[in-house]
Image 1 (cartoon, rainbow, N blue to C red):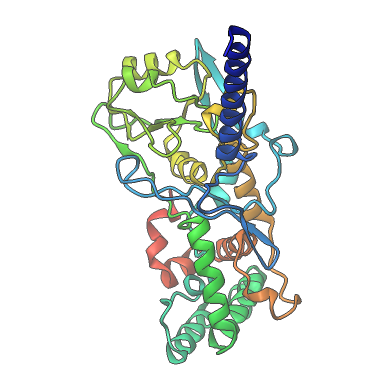
Image 2 (tube, rainbow, N blue to C red):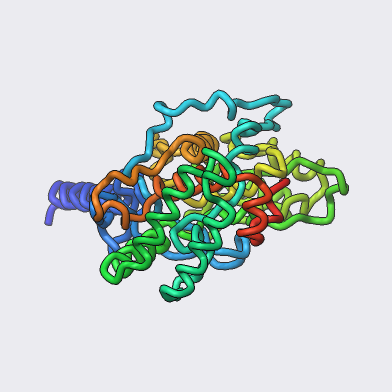
Length: 361
């Protein structure tokens, strides 16, 4: 083979490798949704587009697994959301402070019942006798004639939940929907932070540190400068705070200032649990895709605002057909939360004591 032929062959090999590499990166990202060659495409169930969970991150990150997929059927794009209340409040050097709307957090940022079983305050193996007892107990305290019109939406939902869970045909179907939802979306918001609280904060400290993992490029600078505070999550290779105030403030500030993409923020401590929860349901793209100029659609801040807004506005429509009532999705969760939060504090405390710790938070 002469030198010209060898040159052409080498060029073809290089071209083949380049195309193969590009196809590999595309198969790893496939747009904005986290997928794998094993799990393939998102599954569609009764009109809901759901992303299969890839795998749960181990306890190194926050002590609990985070979701890798999310329900995107009704997800708005970043450009269509309003995010005035999540604008940067102040910025010094590259340190920046950001917060959610305080009124929204106070009104809808608490953990609430999230499915029909939690709404009736029974476990998922409850028989009809237990369901009837729970149903009567709720209406004893929550009837609109007793506490007013603010209980109307809640009682409507309780009636639907009781009817579905007592129906021998509907309950197995609802259980299946609920199980699928939990496998794809993960656990509901429990009001607890996923990062720990370190020893370098004073007792009155109300600030916390939060990483926007959708913007992070995995450079490890923050991890190198404040390793007792920052770590690297092992699924997407992004920075994450595992311990708040694990380092002194000057070290944390230096780590924040070192970020080349300004993805680390000071936030309010009381808003941290919601932001960390929302971060877990945001859709990610790979760093390789980001290097090509692709940007994530999601933002944890605007996604949190949307989550709070839904919990203040979404209402359940019981006039829909029988099959619709058993579909468990984010809209139903928001409707349950809205109706439950409209109840008086003393009623919620008496009937659902497990949420008492968050009533005044």
